[in-house]
Amino acid sequence: EAQVTQNPRYLITVTGKKLTVTCSQNMNHEYMSWYRQDPGLGLRQIYYSMNVEVTDKGDVPEGYKVSRKEKRNFPLILESPSPNQTSLYFCASSWSSSYNEQFFGPGTRLTVL
Amino acid sequence: AQKVTQAQTEISVVEKEDVTLDCVYETRDTTYYLFWYKQPPSGELVFLIRRNSFDEQNEISGRYSWNFQKSTSSFNFTITASQVVDSAVYFCALTPGDYKLSFGAGTTVTVRA
Image (cartoon, rainbow over all chains, first blue to last red; front, side):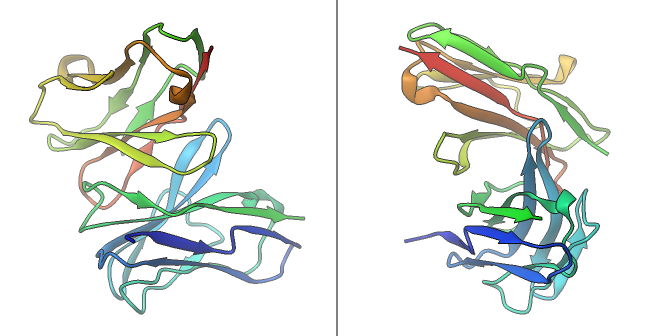
């Protein structure tokens, strides 16, 4: 089944404790992206990747890191999480770019205390 | 920079009523792509439609229809004869194809039986 998976689905952590949210797709998509969803703000793009080893900042990259060592994986790293990073996070992938239909993962609910 | 505005935060209708969701966008690019995504209460994001800036034809898919008007920078979405299963958050999104994707804040539609 074609899909985007994210882990964990739910995470409660404390300020400053490094964490990684994994994202994997099995559709051989070149483009992958991370978004955060907050009430009243919709989805905001954090980082995106056009292909392996090529990443760039979205609209809200502060406090996040990403890497794209393999085509299928695009982990989101929070080196020192803070309470304002409490949010619902979505990973997405598409065939080649932002103008293609995005396939979204199920979301990761992160709470930083 | 591009911007998407969904001025309607919440809409509540009774089943079988029609509902129109407004989407107004801003961009300096002549080539761009517009999308609508649906987020039902279960939380996943589902692609509904993509339209490029050179195609102003309206589109109908079952009970869903979309009206794209470049003159007013709008890409509105109408659900005809709404059903309870249409209850969801609907997001409009825009990209000039430069790998960045901007979403509106979303409109929550509640369809009452």
